[in-house]
Image 1 (cartoon, rainbow, N blue to C red):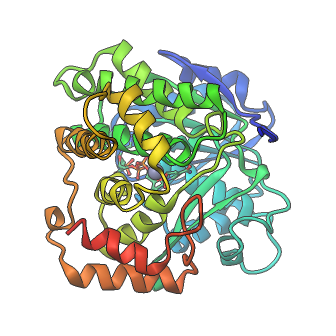
Image 2 (image 1 turned 30 degrees about the vertical axis):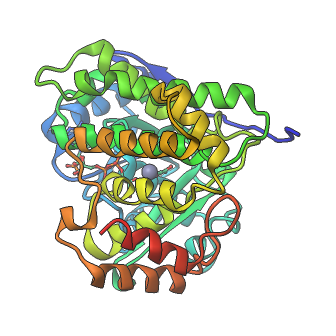
Length: 385
Ligand code: NZQ
Ligand code: ZN
């Protein structure tokens, strides 16, 4: 029986040259901190465009939010926010910059040690500074959701948080901003959005007919646009579809009222924290193996996925499931993303290390049925060697 609350206050301003709209979107009297990553925002000219649009407002910058943003770096931004009495944050970048900015927004208003926000998964966030984003990398959906993932370098802990106070007020999505992305990042974005959709879809049926069809539509769109997205010359319509599909994959809509898995993400986060593998690439290692491991609990949805997404209708139930898993694996491989630990030079030692970290982080009952214990995670990773 469907029964849920759905809330998403983020305004999306989508299209070419929309960065100029910041002039209207950011409060006129705001003291703005613009946060960004390494060199890309400056090199691509986006930072200059942003500053031009902000006009006469008081604007300062915080540079250097790294991929998989660290607590250590973000706390320096919190100090700057406090010292400069900043009252509006503007993230310019991909998921890492946006996630990091959400954390800064919450941490700047937090009483006590802000790492507790991660330990409590965000449930202790009472307030956050208002923020907006200019998205330069379609992948995470962070531009239209209330979650973030932060890594503590000192302990190699990569933990997620979410809070209703951490939605961006607005996000500017200009597909031409993706033109400077290297091919690997485009591939990552497609894979990440694909897995976000799968983790809210591939569970068990709950008569959520629209959510299912919508999720299948997003998966099929990603499959359809992948070759064009990886082509040498970027195409506006292709990138626009990629950008909006990635946003829709994790803005709450397909997840409304349905069981969700997220085990692939939790196992993947440990792989990134330990070995520095790009987020999306960790997911491509875990998901096909997890689908196989969970074929009994996910049986009905696996068959639905096989039929509706890949049009696999011949053979026994298990043959169709096998074929759907194989198609999923070859989809990732076709993006140039390895689906085995060995593809990253890792072996059995990595399995032990990841399982130890999952256990240390309390990831003892993952999956929509809470059936993925550390032993099951071990089996999933061993099958992905
Ligand atoms: O640092 P710069 O120089 O800006 O370079 C970045 C970075 O090296 C570069 N880049 C971004 N836009 C560019 C560009 N290069 C050229 N042209 C552009 N237009 O891309 C590199 C990767 O950026 P990053 O932000 O790290 O990638 P992504 O968007 O994939 O974000 C990954 C992070 O998001 C988290 C992940 O765990 C990871 O930490 N996630 C956040 C989620 C959420 N908030 O809902 C959900 C996701 O599952 C994910 O866990
Ligand atoms: Zn992800």
